[in-house]
Image (cartoon, rainbow over the protein chains, first blue to last red):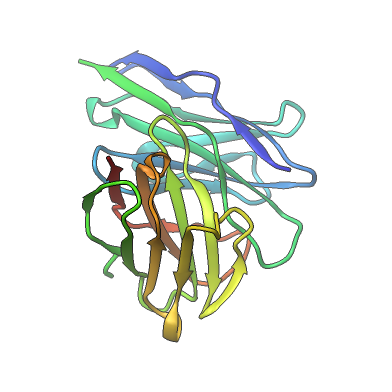
Length: 116
Length: 115
């Protein structure tokens, strides 16, 4: 079985400072990893994904994420936070192996609050 | 390109009543998913369709939940009878195909409150 842990319910960052939202995962094989963002009363928006290759993945809105296989982590980062980045962030994983069933397994989410 | 459409956006019902949710995926997307998101938790997959066939419904409570995707485009998720614990946001997502590297694109969700 696959699982995702987001150890922080909430992360508070001052505007202009770098931000990190943590994610660790567990799969039986090699993972595909995803980050999504959810704004109030809206669905999840895709930010970025790790498939293979370079461990640093760049995505939308200036976000990036670093894949670390030895630590089974996929932390979301941004060099300079904006107030508009305040939202609920979800990490998700999918095992590379298996058949056609490819639903994502999500973490419980981390509230990111950027303070002016 | 239009996104995933869902309706209604909000629904309030009493327990033991029935309810149905509708989803229209992004045009051309063969794979469609229904997720349940309970407050304070991440989305949980209920069912996955590839065209009009079910690929995975292992987490669907089949005694009360049903879903169909006639003609391989729109989909309907039904709950009958509803329980208090079904209060959640029901998210529909689609992807171009079932390739495991592909991202899924989500609709705005239907917020269900069961009283």
